[in-house]
Image (cartoon, rainbow, N blue to C red; front, side, top):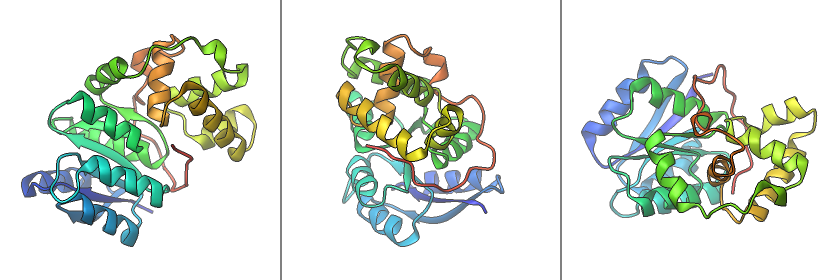
Length: 229
């Protein structure tokens, strides 16, 4: 079954370009489009896509607010934020709102498709330029010793792009147990999302910055509800 994607962008040319790029992959299907954040929230509820490609600067309701509402009301829908410029407040706002991916609109076509597939599988996918901005916004870590050994292990795997299902499989524990670990990790680190936790892992030296984004597309992703802040 193809991944279902909703595109939210107020520029018709951008929407057309995104639709064409995604349409070249038979594992992805665009199920809807909209021009503002309020409609993005409504259509996300109505269509229940796997992923929303969310422009951050839109009329009626901006993409950050729309992302927050979608992630709160329908957490099974993942959001990949799109922007043409990297504003620190905007980048951090999108991450805090729950966006699992962050891309510039000039990203390569393969990177866009990979980000959609990664998001659908519950994996973090952030452009290198956005990572550098996030590194400056997340507070200086006091060290991974504040986490238990298992929490540190889960954080490291999360930062390397593994979804809850993969972490559960590799550690031979239940997915609900992984969700509990992730919840404890976010609380202890004082962050709001998996992406912020991943940046913390980089700052702490647990994971090289180059490993924060999955290098390849996710194969045969399935739609599952991953825990997220």
